[in-house]
Image (cartoon, rainbow, N blue to C red; front, side, top):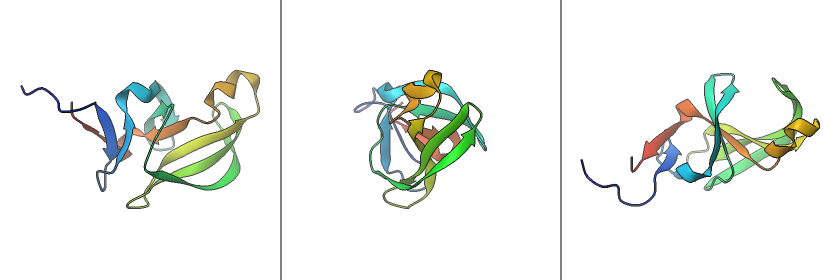
Length: 106
């Protein structure tokens, strides 16, 4: 097997736009409406939609959908504000849905 060229990362499943490094994953234990999702400290090459309050499994949060900067696909969401103290660690972090991202350099 060949050595990988560059860091392990995740890309948009539609257009292969680079989104996040494997090292930026905080948790792989998140759930979305469509299945598993990963929490990242940083993502790149995305833009945010409007902020909205949503009642999620873990309580009320202000979130913004995260879109691929190239193909505009919705890939997940960013936590803007958490209302419960135990959820504050999510603020500023981004969740990407597992089925919307692909691994590169693995």
